[in-house]
Length: 190
Image 1: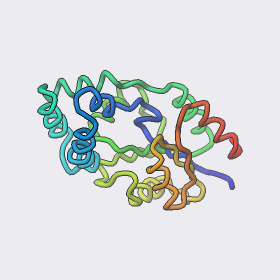
Image 2: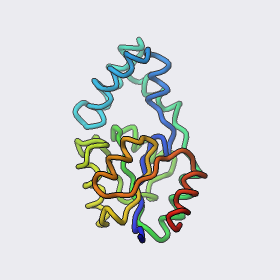
Image 3: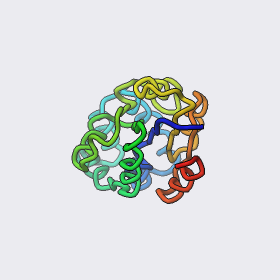
């Protein structure tokens, strides 16, 4: 089947994960799960602001919101092999980005790491008030790409998010590394 577009996740694919490293440093595992569901999920869906997220996380770690932000920033690392692949694919296909994230932090990374312009469209959960794996977020990115689900490949490091994409008819690849992604794409004719 010919594919016309690719949709990439950001954290864990294009960029390193950030929040999980911070959570492991400051919270025991059970508390981490609870805090993620009470704070990170709502922030990803735009139900609470990024500032409120960082303030509340700071309370758990006895730090300021700015210190939390700065520590999160310290975990940011761009996977240049994935960026190179995105640029290659973009020459002949639509390439979108779909991320569960707060808008400000995400856009700060995109600008500072000179990633603006390599994805079109960009769909950010906090701006859409919906997050992966909710089917509505996949439908929105497909609408903006103007490509049928069956002609689109979704790439994410979270298997649940890949299943969410498949539930709307997209093909999906669970990301492990840029090399394995290239192998998976080669198996689909790329």
